Image (cartoon, rainbow, N blue to C red; front, top):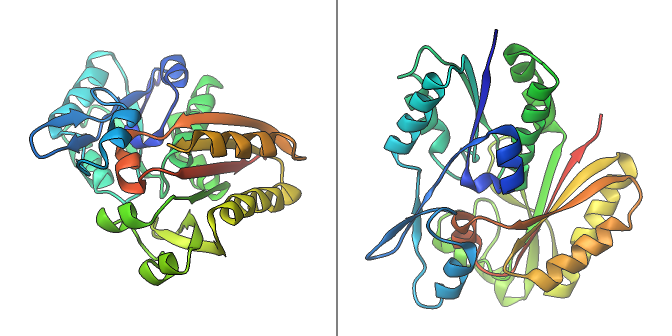
Amino acid sequence: MEKIALITDTAADLHEDIIKKYNIHVLPFRIIYKDREYKDGVEITPKEVYDNLDKEVPTSSLPSMQDMEDTFTKLEEEGYTNAIAVTLSTGLSGIYNAVKLVSENHPSLKTYVCDSQSISAGEGVIVEVCAELIEKGKSFDEIVNEIPNIKSRIDLFFVVGTLEYLKKGGRIGKVSGTIAELLNIKPIISVDKKDGKYYTYDKVRGRKQSINRILEIVEEKLKKNKCRVWVMDGNAPEETKKVFEGIKKMDNVVNVNFGGTISPVSGVHSGPGLIGVVLIEEQ
């Protein structure tokens, strides 16, 4: 009899109730200041990161190898036979390779490591759908075979207050930077499904227009398919709430979830002012 575990990382921005409901094992990234280090989302909150950005912009690092080893050992002790690990995009982090390496030290667990090629709820929704499939009694192989289809149905779009933090953290990808900022051009950023890096999906002038454009993009997607939607906040609560309320009124929305604040590790790289939307097409 298979017993399937789910592993992910704090960049997936899963709600605590989802983590508890499906017993998901979450690996915390590390937030590193000059004189101290914290486990992402465990020892430091997004608010604490944002409140200190004017004093120091921390760096981030992978979950510790010890945390990864401990997670796999715990799963073995709890009698799991299989594990599905969904990680932050390889285009943004080295966590996929690290988890794969650690999983090979635990051959008694048949493990599949999935590069989400996404971030935040774009990563988290893969975990959630896998959890729903486990609950329905699907086998490990059936779920692993379904993952490419799940990924193909996900879209992610976000805007940021400034590109400064993405540039500082080396996460700018194929998003044009300095000249666009001087002209007050606001890119609508998405993640390339081939390499998992950020790219400019569209661009408009000014913050207000960028928020309106996000809503238009969501509406365009919903005209083609029914979708579940998540709205994420990166220290822009009032504007995020307006986007959430706007999407709630749209046709073809199966449900819209306020995903809450993005994880500290994502906040470090995006800076304040992020509004993100994730959609998954219903089948």
